[in-house]
Image 1 (cartoon, rainbow, N blue to C red):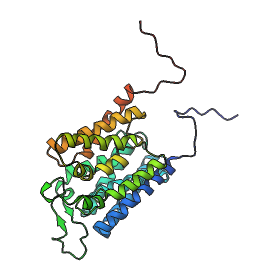
Image 2: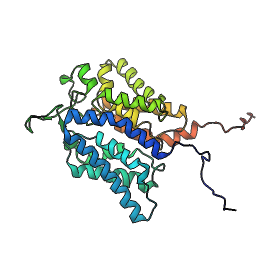
Image 3: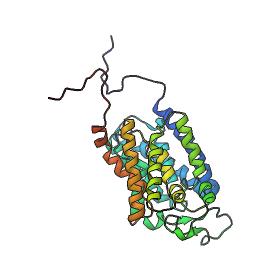
Image 4: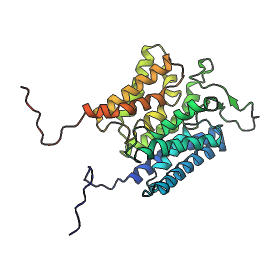
Length: 311
């Protein structure tokens, strides 16, 4: 008789493996990557692909050095690389992107035990590290459709959030005809990917709905242009693809609701009162830190357990 296996829960197995989940996320990210390539040129695609490669290499080498089982086949490193690439400006130097990939995989993910053990979203944290370390490069934007323009003409100094005086039309915002990070500008492509994940049952629609809805309500109350606030920055990208990360967000639907509302509150607080025009990355990272506390107080009742009577 084989020895009994003692493992942490869950003990119920299903066909939906980590690899299949990550593959679905990559499929959902594909429209955003294609849109970013069309809008910003081939260099945007190269940067995203290199970020995915750097993340895979970082995880592979770390496992070799530490003599751990190779885990690159679960595709989580690829997803982290693609997400990080989509959160970068197209003109960012390659070596800076490599530093971000190393920070995401080795520092944020592997140092804490690998997938499922990291306390913060690796792509979000790496973006913040790059923003704080290379601020000028992380806020130098490529204008949309830069083909045939000189290097000077192809660079824009501000996104719509940073410079409200240069706001494009709602239609341009929806289809990505504006400056910004590679994967955050085309709202149409991101919504296609987000709806795909919801239909496939990969993410809970409560999180993106509550996140975006909170920003909409606070923007309206504060007298801001609501459609612009919703389509500017990385709100849609963050709400669908990073605030829904399994490892760093609450396990219950009620907890995810609190998490998402907190993200929306912090995003608006940073946008409206902070020194940074965008607050999505910081809000998700801060709420990642609060996830264990949320899970502690918003816990499902174990089956068959009755609440103790008050004395």
